[in-house]
Length: 289
Image 1 (tube, helix red, strand yellow):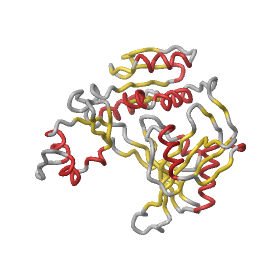
Image 2: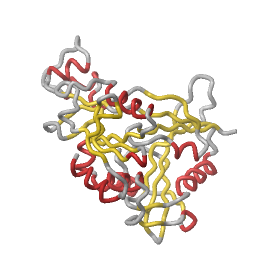
Image 3: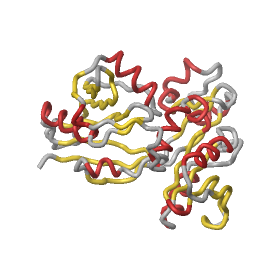
């Protein structure tokens, strides 16, 4: 938490308040910049877990919404993100603070859009996106002077009953760390629209980090807030692993002791696991006119 705060202080001339309890009804904001109405939370995995920390499914999302009622944007950083992906986190913080002094600036018109190999996509997302790699069949990259500087990926999805079937999901968008490329998200998305002419495109914005403004710029409409999700904590509370890796039907092969009469969470607890919850996502939809 101190490291994050010191990094923020190094990037802004605005007053930075630490451990404020006056704004959110006695709840603490680890780091708050009043001039920007911007707050940061650093969530240690051990202390913000469900069993040990007592932070159940609603808490982090509730705190985000409480901040929003005071017109404060609250960024929630998980401990493993700072430790394992510090360059990505620092780049995102620099953009949030509007500090472009150490950020390379590239004009979108100077880039060319190309389809990229899965290996190149994997490496780029691993190094430049907090969620890392994805499973995507449609992969575009923006090239500048022979270097990959931005990536956008998509997958074909199933329409709900009565739909046309021409629906896609925008899975990932990432720009190279410490780079600012105005207009690149629009350029990548328009390239995809021209090639696939989709009826509908859906996407999800992580509420811990994103408000979804970029989607609005692309012509998406807000749909709804999805409920918080959770990660299981492994390696002595140092690593998060998404719940999709521990669905109940998988547990018989993952746990030394498995009881089919118990729920997924009950089985995981019986084997000594804990979990941590996020803030949910904002769902957005683009519909072709």
